[in-house]
Amino acid sequence: MQRRRFLGLSTLASASLFGWSTFSLSSCKKNTATKASTNYNAIVIGSGFGGSVTALRLAEKGINTLMIEMGKFYDVTQSNNTFSPTLPPDKRSTWLKTKTELPFGINLSWKEKYTGVLDRVAFKNMAVYRNICLGGGSISNGGVLLEPQETHFNQFISSTINFQELKNKYFPIVRNMMQASKMPDDLFNSKYYQFAQVCKEHAINAGFEITNADSFYNFDIWRKETLNLVPKSALNGELLYGNNNGIKNSLDRNYISDALGTGNLTIKTLSKVVEVSYQAETEKYTVIVETINERGILQETTTHQCSHLFVCAGSLGTSEILLKARETGKLPNLNQEVGNAFGTNGNAFTIRKNINKPTGNMHSSPPTLSVLDFNNPIAPLAAMQDIFPLGIDLRILLMVGQPYNEYKGSFQYQQSTNSIELNWATNGMDQPKQAMQNFIEKMNTANNSQLDTTFIKEGVSSTFTYHPLGGVVLDKASDNFGRLKGYKKLYAIDGSMLPGNCAMVNPSLTIAALAERNLREILNNDF
Image (cartoon, rainbow, N blue to C red; front, side, top):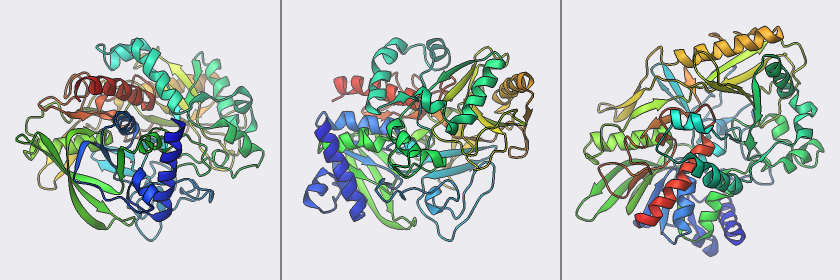
């Protein structure tokens, strides 16, 4: 495994150095770019938590695999300047736009479009954020790996999946692969986490339980930051657009590099899948891909075929690919559940002001403290104390709640634009919004703080999400292991599997663990 990772990381470094958009271990050995072949045993669309797990488990079994990623590969180098800074952000922050599109706060602009890491797709009544880069959500998220409770998993996700098997076998595999750990107490109690310390005290005052999440940040590097032995990243509040000093054990540093190191994986970046179809006479899937440059200009269109197709493009991307294929007659046998049960994981942001203690000039990443309100009368929820790295102490605290939401939206294909639209009601976030309001009121009452409406004018957000889930749900659009109904050897393995929520926790760990579980079944029986 160590040799594989070394070879994989070397391949990634070569791809970055020479600017290759298509590469494999052979390209590193030959010091020249790989040309993607026409035929593969398996194609994996997407490189997030589902896609990366899938690619490794296929490649280590000797299966010739192509991974297609719409975004760019950002290689963390000694320059410590790979990603956009948090303040001020630049073109590397945002996908093919000339300004940031943050849900609150000041948005900044630049001159030219670029293939940055964070995208915002605006639908009616709901804006969906997604990560577009090799490694997906592991690059520009908080590094949080939270495990759902068994009762919540069985109630809100699936009662047909053996949770104890996930807990005892697959959650540990993911944590081990990503070198996850809890933040040491001395770091949490340092001056860089005043904001979280205050939140912990306030939560206890209000009678709530608390827990510390596992994180795939490297806390040895975090310590070096405090001693000025490495350039600051976490201590500069970097998170939203990536971390520049290698502090985060993102998917490109474990699952993807290990898969490349087998020699059985080819990666094609800056490439969007525009069509998939199935040929019954050859029992193969055809995937048409458009490759762009870093400014978004089309470079080439290629066609690839495979016997096993894994769609792992995230809730939004997977729903779009499959819904288009069904409605245009390319995959007409997909059932009517494709596109249904979309949800926001209850994402509800809120800010408390007039905090009775200093919260610190700089909020360090990663977020780690989660406050539990499972007895909330409106909907059970957990709320992470998030960072708000302004560089000055305004005595305000930003929290992101993840209440359960009964409401689910759905996607529809629009022939006139060849795109999908989200059907989301204007009151689709009422339940999580009200649950979060109830929670914050208890926090404020116990600690003499107030709800802030300066940054989030409605007090509790209800028009955007960073955790899109659903669209191709297990036991609905697919079987219990992600096999799409209506076709053989076609799979959806990503956040689209979950029915719009992840039982009040960040979904990364659950998605990856389900992918590990599903691939074990698929490799044992479908190849």
